[in-house]
Amino acid sequence: MSVRIFKPAKTAMQSGTANTKEWVLEAAPSSARANDPLMGWTSSSDTQRQVRLTFDSKDAAIAFATKQGWAYTITEPKPRKPINKSYADNFRYGRKDAWTH
Image (cartoon, rainbow, N blue to C red; front, side, top):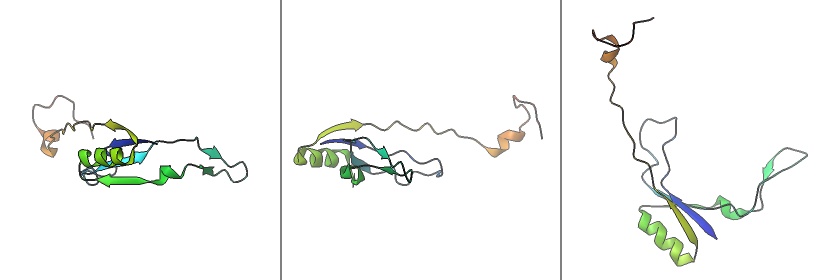
């Protein structure tokens, strides 16, 4: 079995870094998903896709995958580039853009 180890990115609906501290181990898909022609539901016979394990560190996730005998790929997280903005900058005297309402 092949697994993927990664650190999840924050969702677009949150401004903080909740749920981004832990490393996640999830199985790679072994079969394609199929559409049910009658109901239109998407189904899969791959039950390993439902398993999602979390670990406190990358080393713990690697150790678990190695102990189970699973091949793994690691996706390193990209560093965030915070943009420091101030609401008062919208009204400063020497701003570059013209003021519009």
